Amino acid sequence: MKRSISISFSVFTCLCLLLATERRALAYINPGDGLLAIQSAGAFLAAAGYYMRRRILSLFGRGKKPVQSVPVPVTVQTVQKENTRNAA
Image 1 (cartoon, rainbow, N blue to C red):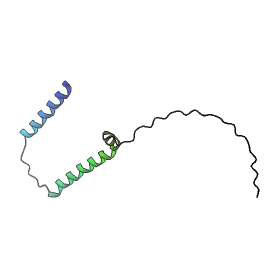
Image 2 (cartoon, rainbow, N blue to C red; image 1 turned 90 degrees about the vertical axis):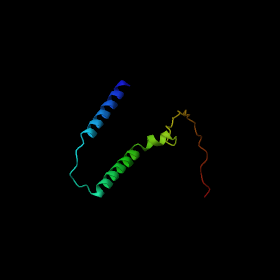
Image 3 (cartoon, rainbow, N blue to C red; image 1 turned 120 degrees about the horizontal axis):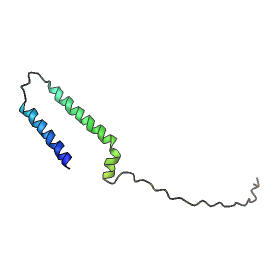
Image 4 (spheres, rainbow, N blue to C red; image 1 turned 180 degrees about the vertical axis):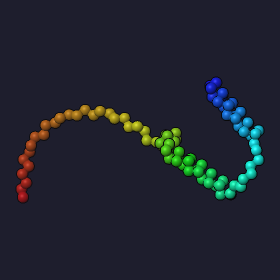
C-alpha cells in the first residue's frame, strides 16, 4: 500500500514539474495529427479488448466454463454372434 502511494506521489510530482516548466511551442501541428493520435489510441484499445476477450466475457458470466471430466467406468460386454446370414 505504501509503495503504491509513493509511486502515485512521484507521478503526480513529475506531472506538476512538467506543467510548471512548460515552454512556448513554436511549431505548427496539423489538424489531422490529433485525429491520428485518437485513431492510434482506439486501435490500441480494440486490440487489447480482442486479446483479453475471454477475461472480459468471464466477468459478465458469458465465458466458457471449464468442463470437468467425470471418468466413466468402462465395462466389457461379450457379444454373442447371432445368425447374420441374409436371405437374399
